[in-house]
Figure: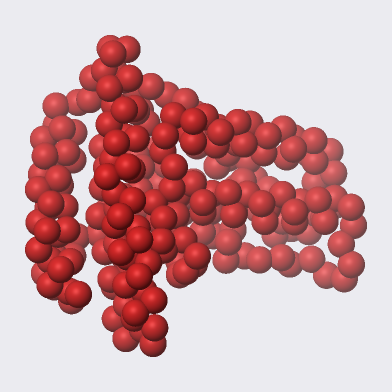
Amino acid sequence: MGPWLRIRYPPYNQNMNGPIVLLTVVLASGSHAAGAPGIAQAEFARLKNDFFNRELAFIPGIGSEIGVKTCDATLGDLSRAGVRDHVAYLDSVEKNLTTLQSELNLLDPQDRIDYAIMLRMARSERRFLNSPGDFTTTFDEYFDPYTMIQVQLLNLSGASDAASGWRDIATRTGEVPAFLAQKQEALRRALAGGHVPDKRMIEQGGIEVAREAEKFFATDMVGEA
């Protein structure tokens, strides 16, 4: 593997790192119910499965990181409408989890832990996405393609189906211009509202990494191919 490797993961602002790590914990936990689940157990299992799928669709880099191949050919939707729809979904998650709160004692111990993680993540992610001075002025999302594709290249090492992996990388790379346009539009809205990124963020997390990403896509990735 070339000297270009500089993984910057998880994506998004540091405020999101904890919840994203928690998501992978719950993903790994699976279901621990014994015997036939009751109504509360079955409803929570449905909510949990839907939540994981929606989070992976919104932040497909998580899927690439943990080996979910169906996430490898997309960058997700950071358009204004895409973010608005995801925030509305997070609102519904909190509402549904709150409805189940009176039946927590009917869930097994692992599911009660998963319940707390999901509720914390839904609230934290919604707060982050709704903050014009946070999500819309960060630069991390600009480099999600850079990060995600590095992860994929690492996973290609010794892979039995490298051709399929390269097809996913090519498809994801093709989405980069539209993806960056979505983030630029969000940044313009933030600036129009008086939310200016920190100078250090621009210099270190913006210009410096942009140069790395440019070299990676223009030279290093082609060399790996």
